[in-house]
Length: 268
Picture 1 (tube, rainbow, N blue to C red):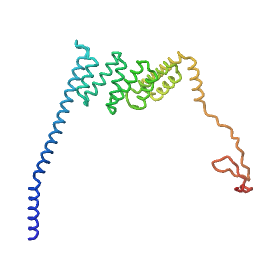
Picture 2 (cartoon, rainbow, N blue to C red):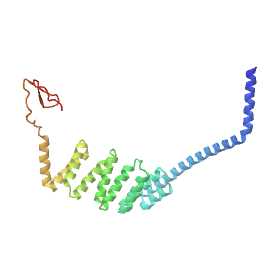
Picture 3 (cartoon, one colour):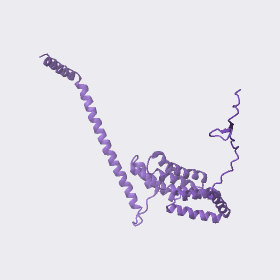
Picture 4 (cartoon, one colour):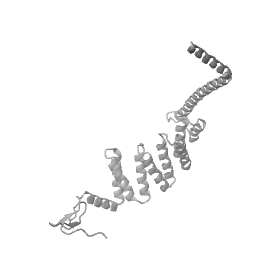
């Protein structure tokens, strides 16, 4: 009986609390509904924006088809898509296409700026390595060889699994040749031959290495001499350490004999 009384009392207390706080609960309920609706609208709008951006980019790509008579898309066309649909995958691709088009239009400083913008805004993108390579190429096209060399090396170290890594290595060797540093170019080709031993890149590296020898005959002699020294078996140096006698011991890990008959020197 007492348990039923207690249950009824609790129920009435709950109803009293509900009556007292119903206005606050109603507001919280409405806020939750509005928030959920807002999230749904945001997701729908983001999806619609992504579709619109992809459609705009697709139209530009179609106009760039040489089989059609339409004028090819310009860099400004691609960059307009990137500006109108920010934070979309299509805008990301449009920005990179715009930078690449600027490069093909020989507008190298502008291309460099757009490649750098891409890296700043999309550092984690799968296309970041391509943009980094484009930035290096734009620097090289402007004759900024030291900056370009550093940029190509950054592609190799920061994106080691990217498909453009070997192209970046070839570019570093090309710059070394342009800077009259054939020894460094040779080292780059030899490293590529070793790391890509079973690929066409290794064959290309060997061909460029032979071309380098034709251009610098003295480099071929130096390389051949270094290879012969490297391939020779190592010769053991004669053992000139004192030989232990019958009354001496050799301390393990050293060549210093210690007499077994004379006591060790007293410590100061």
